Structure formats: structure tokens, C-alpha cells
Image (cartoon, rainbow over all chains, first blue to last red; front, side):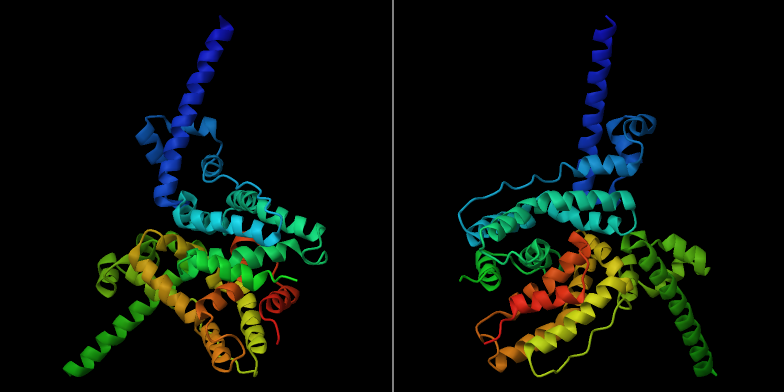
Length: 191
Length: 191
């Protein structure tokens, strides 16, 4: 009986957490990280602030949980060449930058990361996860001798991905297939 | 007499505007654009909100004025080659990204620009001003035939500058002289 009642409690806790996370995520996508309000979450879900802080010790901890829903890490392509692999990854990235929820939320995370160490740690983790497939195709190309073994993977990722981030948030240039191909041809030369 | 009194009024108005702008700028640099509070500005300067809104019709209008102090446009270099010119500009940019006030404020502007059209217009104007010298050295290289006349200046600027913006705000990689040289050598090939 004790077990059953504990299970019932666990389910109630899970439901309450899910409801809170869903509302946090809604506010995050609508207003950015700075526009998430614990008062507003409590008001809309009808769950008390005391309960919210029982689930998450701080506002940052709740935000980190909500942010982890923002995007999924792309799969690792295997086309047989660095150019082909990068084309697959950059095409997915370009699409996400122009349509995904995280794309309009990300500047608010970068902004908060300038001042809040917990958010900075979250941003670093999100970033590493998103970039892992790029790192891996570059490492593979180095192992195969397609590019110099002495070159830095971090540099390769920065020159490949940087122009896309730049176009999305800074210059607001349109990112189309032509741009993807021009960047790839400029940066990865054959032979 | 009327003239003299009007001049006295003008001076008072100028002093009051300068005081408000200085306080706005202080909050902007400390907290980002989302952390600028008109209530707090009124409290600290001792100038009423009514007066603030007499000078600037909206919070965005005041922010735009304060943001225009954030950075100065770099001078146009003339070393005789695209590589040389780009090296001067990227060295300045790398230094600014790592030390200037605007560098920690910029993500808050990008964030606000996602939701506020006035801030989006401000961001576009700031961006164009900062990027003008890059555009101009690329245009000059095209005119001299150093790079293809058919290539897009916007693409060149994106691939040159994108990796630096990426390292400052996204990957948090250190930007040193070696990185500047590696990016330039990778992107601008001689002959």
C-alpha cells in the first residue's frame, strides 16, 4: 500500500513537473529566456511557487531543463567525403536557423550567458551538443588525410559554421542553397 | 531677453538629456538592453518619467540613442592588398570583440531585435555601419581583379567575419593572432 501511494505521488509529481516545463518552454519560445517569469508560470499552471522551487532549486535550473528541449542534435552523415558530409550538415543547419524555435530563442541565451554563470554553462553544453557532428566529420576527414592532420578542428568548425550564424542573427542575409554551396566551395578546396 | 531665456532652457534640456543618456548607457552596458529600466533611470537621475518621455517618445527611442554610443566605425585601411586590408580590420575586430563594451551588450540587442521591430531596425543600422569597411575593402579588391568580380561582397564579408562572431559568442574559442592568420590564409588564397 505504501508503495502504491508513493507511486501515485510520483506520478502526480511527474505530471506537475511536465506541466511546469511545458509552460516554461512556451514562455521561453515566445519571449526569450529573459521573458520567462516564475510568477506567471505559477499563475498560469495554478501550481505554487513553493512547489516550483521544490522541483528546481533556482530559476536557472528550471530554464536549463526547458532549454534542453529546444533542439535535437543532428545525425552524423557518411557520404564518403568531407564536402558531402558538410553539405548535409550545413543544409540541416540552414533549415533549422530559419525555422526552428531555438533559433529565435538563442540570442536570449547568449545574452543571459554574458551575466549568469549557470546559463553560460548551459550555453556551452548546448553548443557542444549541436556542434558534435561537425567536429566528427572534420576529425574523420583529418584521419583520412582529406585535410591536414595538423589543422585545428575548432578552426574548421568556426569557418564552416560561423558564416551561417552570422547571416541568421547579424547580417540577416538570406541563407539559400547557393550560399551553402558557395561557402563550401570557398572553404573546402579539392586536391 | 526671450532669446537668452530660450538659450538657458535649451542648455537645461541638453544637460538633462545628457544625464539621462549617460545613465541609460550605464545600465545598457551593465545589464544588456533588457535590463534598462525607465523607472530606475528616473530614480537615479532624479528626472521625472514625464520629462524622459518628452525627450524620447518611447523606451526604444531612448535605447537607440544610447546604443549609438556603443562603438565607433573602424577606419578604412589601405595596405595595397585584400589580405593586408582584411588583416588590419580583423585584428581590430578581434580586439573589440574581446574588450569593447558593445561586445557584451550585442546579444541583448540581437535578442530584442527578434521581437521588437524598432530594435531590429537599430540593429540593422549598427551592423551596416560596423561592416562598411569590410564591404569597401572587398569592393576594392573586386574592382582591382584581386577576387572575382562576380562574387558577392555579402558572401565575402560573411565568411571573413562570421568565424570571429562565432568564436566570441557561440563557441567562446580564444581569438588570437594565429586564428586571424589561419582564417585569412584559408579564405583568401593568393594567385
